[in-house]
Length: 337
Image 1 (cartoon, rainbow, N blue to C red):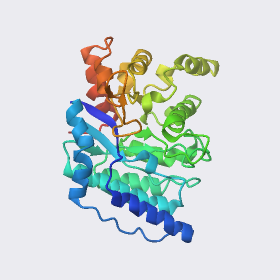
Image 2: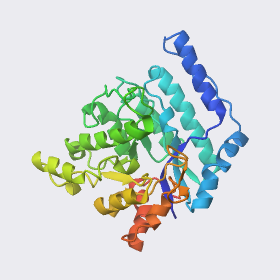
Image 3: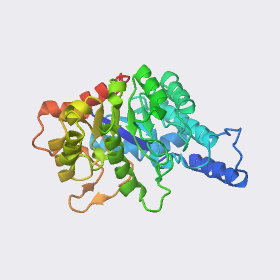
Image 4: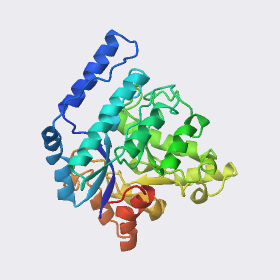
């Protein structure tokens, strides 16, 4: 089986976007916290149409079997509104993913968005929503935004005790988190080109300089987009850890931190596979996502990442099995299909 650990519902029916627009318009008129979740009406047929000519078609064409599926990352918008805004929006988004999985249980399995909001500790709403999605919907993980402010980094680092109640619940439920920011509202950052990749690198550095995994030895994180700048600057990070008196990175982090393959050219994937142990790499494409076009140099879609894994001559057959399936099952033990 080939499992894609990183997919977002970027093709959701238009009614979801209209709900969000109305929610934010009402907030602009009256900034007081909303007490009403409101309704979202989307038919099963609308869900089917949104997927059949997009993710499902691409699964068939590219030879992948199952996608770990979550709400659209750039639309999480944790910096918009307040905690109630985020909670209601998140609940609707996660419920829609649950419906997708119910319609296509052989193609998708759910991962939840969390109702984060700048300055609001995750101890209550995030823990509650994670429990709901895992226990009621059968989701197998969550997406964790290390910067709910949208590019201003106003919350404590991931190593801070501020996050510990969420980590405790993740360990109790035995689910990992993918580190994933949302859209940038800071004009210095392009959302998918710099904010995503910079956040991936920042999160890794926060883990490196902390003792987080001493406190939570079973906590697991996936750093997407190939780890941002991490593989390219692996020597720098090894050196910093050494200068800080830390153990080698393989001991300090690689029992808990994993990287996906959302890297959109062969040399980039080759570097990732050369630097990071194959045991710590999970296959992913993020399709349909940040880069949707065809690479004129190859004639293939940039995000057809299976081609890059297949095209690496250094991997053994066993290592390919790890990347395509076994590692993902180990990181997501609730995945039982």
